Amino acid sequence: MKSFEELEAWKISREKRASIWIFANKLPKEETYRMKDQLIRASRSVTANIAEGYGRFHYQENIQFCRQARGSLYEILDHLICAFDCEYLTKAELDNYKDRITICLKILNGYISYLLKAKELNKPVTNNQ
Image 1 (tube, rainbow, N blue to C red):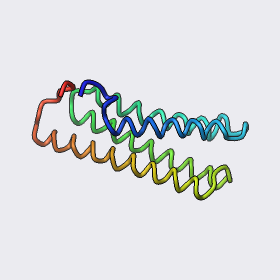
Image 2 (cartoon, rainbow, N blue to C red; image 1 turned 90 degrees about the vertical axis):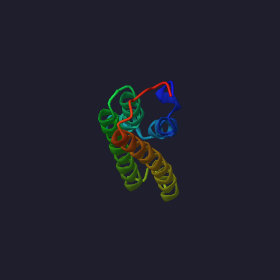
Image 3 (cartoon, one colour; image 1 turned 180 degrees about the horizontal axis):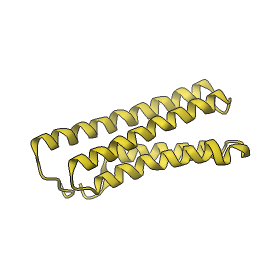
């Protein structure tokens, strides 16, 4: 791979980030510096951490950044549950977001598993595979 942009985990998280941005911008004005800001920051954190981890040349560092990205996905889920509780989302909308986040998590966990196996095999990290 020549770039983090080729990682499936980054691509799907980018799609999720875009959908979160659209939702967050529909929130009431009083949520601008609360829920809206938190949702946008968490969604950006996912892709940023995947990218930063890719730029590291040690497996363990890459894994740690991916774990932080995973934590941000769970943070997004919590904010969305809050949005549902505040009646900013319907149950169907929340379920759709949950499904998409679950897909992101599965792909990211797969990437983390790949990195863990590569680390065990002590293969040198190259970004030009």
